[in-house]
Length: 535
Image (cartoon, rainbow, N blue to C red; front, side):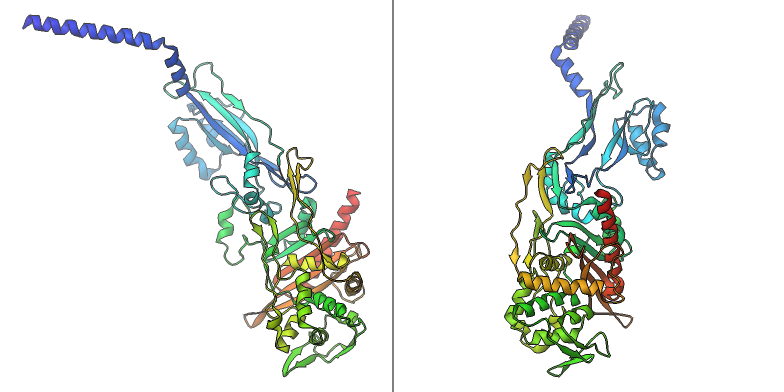
């Protein structure tokens, strides 16, 4: 028995000796040292900045502001400083991260300088709280990919041009920073590659300021000759930094881009009816006596001036926006050409502004749907089944100013790699000859007189000449016995050589002249002042 115990003891000693030798070998192994070093290295992404979205002047629409982010290696001596740099509502969560001991990155409200184990970075914030052109730019989903707008349309391009700032720590087996080791920081400058839009940031901000008084509505600004969208704003706006709040607002639906949604257009459509009449050989001198009401096969249509306008020619009818005149005008026209005229002016058409970004077509009645004279009457002044977007109304106005040629709408200039020049430009779209140059010139003069000559026209700017047309579209919806209407103004300025078309839609507003016209006037005056400063 004693010999057996001695043998077991000797065997145990041999095994311990072999284990010691093996451990010594492992401790000097180059491969193991490299593996241990790899396991003790931890890299954190401080920020990832997607490719840029520019306006037409290469002014950035995103990444315009910065925030502080701190990379924290938890140490007892930095707890108080870190907790003091975050909002009270977040301190409990941040304390848990500190207690876990692993390095982490958080957003802080100030730079933490000289704090042990903490490095502060000033990094771009993708969106402003009051984001310029929010409905156009869009927003990202929880994974950082484009979910709407240009962010979604050009997600691959913006992802390819993303740059990331990182920090790497070398830690020991206990998760502590190795003595003498310094974090490795990679913080490249934000990239310049991205997409260039037709939007003008300065004009966009003027439009958004002018429309801030709107509860619901839209404002659109176009370049007449090209159909390029220089500004597009929908109200209320939403903040990409607080999507949850906007999504919950079901009453006002701020996530909808109303500039590309269809509404009843009212008297702005009289431009199309007048064009159809002139193109069919009707004289601008055609007279009609408005008594305040017109009987169409037993159905009576009232004028907004119940006492009637008296005898008017076409120019006077446009200036006074006389419904009976345009009803009488349309009833004498070829219905097929009446509808095709509207189609050539963009009604009933949708536009692809970017990949997957398409505007609503609205609804243009067919010739067969204008079989009854009452349907023609409603159609003549933009009521009935007809609906259109602010964009379509704007393109109709562009045609009037463009020698009768209707341009296609566009939103994207192209792509850029350097933030200074286009590396890939969008092709210019062809125009459609919707009416003769003479017809367009005649209607343009009607519209200038409607703003500059007509008394009590709230659209008349103080600093520049202009032209345009009001619209007050019935909706058939009533609140407390009062019918809700869509108030419109579609205009242009300067009158002699128009540079901009502006369409204002006030959803559930008052009359076009009281709700929409003053907003147009403000925009025209502020843009004119901006142009003088630029020159």
